Amino acid sequence: MRKAPQFGDRLPTTLLFSLLYPIGPAAIVLMPMIVGGLIDGYGYTDQQAANIAALEGMGLVVSSVAAALWIRRVSWVRVLLLAFLAYGALNAMSANLAAYEPLLVVRFLTGLAGGSLFAVSVAALGDNTEPDRAFGFAQAVQGVLMLAAFAASPWLLEAWGVRSLYYLLGGVSLLMLVTVRRFPDRGRVRAGPATAATPGTRHTSLIWLGLAASVIYFVNVFGFWAFVERIGQAAQLPAGTIGLALGVSQVLAIAGALAAAWASDRYGRYWPLLIVLIGQALALFALLGPFGSVAYFIATGAYQALFIVAVSYQMGAIAKLDVRGRYLVMMTAAQGLGAAIGPAVAAGLIRGNDYGAIILLAGLACLVSTLLFVFIIWRSRGVDAAAAPPVVSNAHAP
Picture 1 (tube, rainbow, N blue to C red):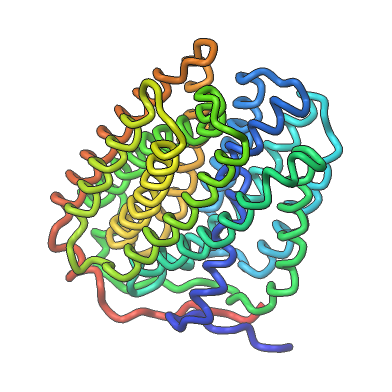
Picture 2: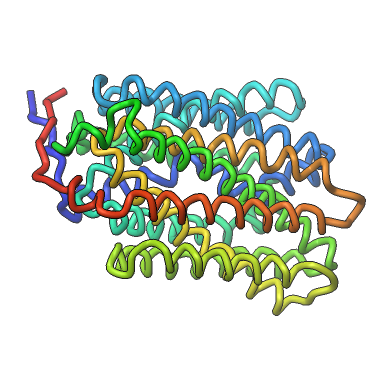
C-alpha cells in the first residue's frame, strides 16, 4: 500500500489545503449571487432565500462541532472521500429542486458535507508553524477562486439561473476527488504546555471567548454580505456593475490575504484588527444613504479585503492558544453559526428597499467582536513563546 504523504510546512502541502479551504463554505461566500438567484429565479421572498442560506450555515455548524470529536482520531483521507462525494451529489440535487421545503433540507445536508471539508482544512492550516501566514495564503487562494466565480455568476445566472451555481460547486467537489490520495491521513499535534489546551485553564476560557467573538463577527459579515447584491439593486445600480464590483472585491480580498500572509505576526495583532474595525466601519457608512457606482466599488472592495485580514488574524490568535487543534476546528462552527444567524436576522430588518438597519447591525457586530479579540490578544500576550516548541508528527498511512 502506498504510504500517505506526511504533513509539513512545505508550500505544496499548504497549497493543497488552501485549495480545499474554500470549497466547503463556497455557497456561503457566494451567498449574494445565490440569494439573488433564488429570489429572481424561483420567486422566493427575501426571508425564504435567507432561510435557505441560514440552514446551510447551520449544517456547517453541526458538522464542525462534530469534527472536534473526530478530527484527530479519524482518517482525513476517508473523510474527504466521503465528503467530496456527498457535497457533489447534494449540489447536483439542489440544482434540480425549486420547491422551498425540500431545498431547505438538501442545503442543510450540503452544509454538513461542506463543514467536514472545511474542518479538515482548518485543522491542517492551524497545524502550520506560522498559522497567520498559512491562513492568509489560504484566504488568497480562496480570493482567486471566488473572483472567478463572481465574474462568471452574472452570466451563469442570466443563462441558466441559480441551478448553474449549484452545478458549479458540485463539479468542483467531484474534480477534487483526484487529489484525495495526496492528502495526509492525519494532522499533527504541537507539543506544548498543557495549559494551552486543557479545559478549565484561563487559556481555554479565552478560546471560548474567541469562539463567541467569531460568531458575532460573522453575524456582521454575512448579515451584510447576503444582501450586498440587493443593496446595489436598491440603489438602482446596473446588474453588470454590481457583479463587476463584487468581482473586484475578490481581487482586493486577495490583496488583503497576501498582506496578512506577508505581515504574519510581525506587527502584532492589535493594530491589524483595529485597522479592520475602522476600515469596515467606514465602508459600511459609505452605503448609508444615497450612493453611486464608485462608492459601491470602494465600499465592497475595502470591506471584503479587511474581512479576509480579520479572519486570518482571528484564526491565528486561536491557533496559538490551542496547540492540540481540538478547539480550532470549532472556529468553523462559530463562523458557520454567525453566517446562519446573520442573514436570518438581517432579513427581518429589511423595510421595502431600505437596507439601512442591516448596515447598522453589521457595524455594531463588527465593533463588539473586534474589541473582544483585542481583549483576547491582550490577555494571551506571551503565550506565543510558550506555545511554539518543536512539532510532533502524527501522520499515518491510510
